[in-house]
Length: 417
Ligand SMILES: *Cc1c(COP(=O)(O)O)cnc(C)c1O
Image (cartoon, rainbow, N blue to C red; front, side, top):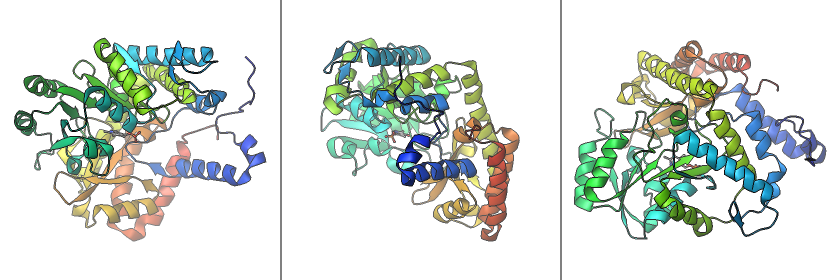
């Protein structure tokens, strides 16, 4: 098949550079930033050159409303194959009866799950935002908080673990139409069976928002929500390492409702370049190399948690089962916001986050990106030391910045560059 634009590599900006040097400069500047600082944002990763190639392909030109074999546009016979492959690979990877790979983002997938199962005004029980719930779990600034009646459960302030007794009590009191399990900052495995039991007791749907752990699930490094949840929402760009986007998994009986909730209820034309890139990422995630990657991500996160605890930071729940951890830097004499600034100056990029103690901002870190770069336990242990050094003493930032530059230089995210 002739290809109109030949890409010399997904990172080649030659074509853009000749036409629009201003924007080419920005692409290169961002590549430089990503390559010379440490990406500790738990939701980020480095997607592969193959995924980037699919994203930057002529599939971006195609309009494809509807589903394979039933489109509202002509000329979909080739992109239909891409979507069928993506769906089949997602079903096989996660052992799901049905997959919808059209959601433009994780939030769009959650919106579609609500649209499939709920009516405006219904009561939904989800993790409260101050405890690690996502915007789509009832924030008043989000459609979820505006259109549904959210009740929030939380974590135990001492242990930092989900309080399943509270979940049960709230479910019995409020009789929600759906229960959502999933979080932006919970470092431990979610007990999907426990949530299913409560959902069954009160006759609620169980929606698993597995945006974060789905990549670990793909690699066999975290329990799967698929056998327990009525609908699983996920992103494809976090640990899963695919393109920026969302997806939904469910049983056959809800397949049609979920598909209609995505298109035409909440979205228009599918982004076929992204769907092709999702297929590429699912293919990568099905390999033994990805299984090893997912386990290494967790091993690195554990080493990071141990290292930061040894340096005196307060690690929520005492550690992690996953790719992410949250810490309170207060014992080192800095609050979360100051800490984020000091770390940024030292070349470490991360987020602040909610902690089990209300009104305290902590830090959320993840190991998905650095593990993709090839860093292992030795490097992660060193990062914990650098992290604490930069936090304790602002004037140490410059030295840490140099060591971060050296480390990232030895583990480039895109080696060909
Ligand atoms: C990341 C995330 C989302 C949203 O994903 P976007 O692609 O940013 O819309 C939803 N829910 C949870 C729990 C997340 O972590």
